[in-house]
Image (cartoon, rainbow, N blue to C red; front, side):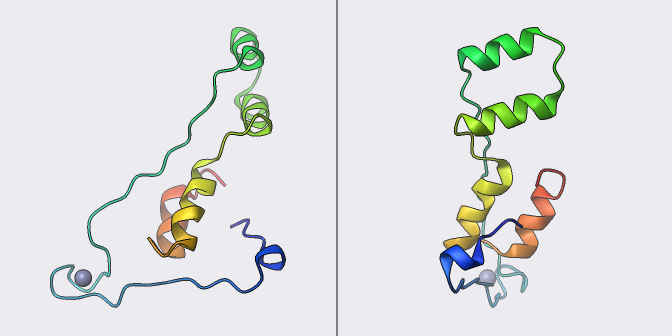
Length: 94
Ligand SMILES: [Zn+2]
């Protein structure tokens, strides 16, 4: 999933035990993950041209955009969700 284990050392992941209220899933409620693109001058120029979406994504990342998975990984590392759920909701956007 792009987690840098060498950089972070040991990583602890969590999974809820589950209860009757959540029907044993361990998930209570929902949380949102977001991908926010800063609409810079350089991106503005790119969207006016016939440039493919991957090039625009790369430029947005270079300008500090945190990807959907990157955002989900923050929730994973803080114990808010499981790696299964991160993979499930971000499998199209590594
Ligand atoms: Zn529960």
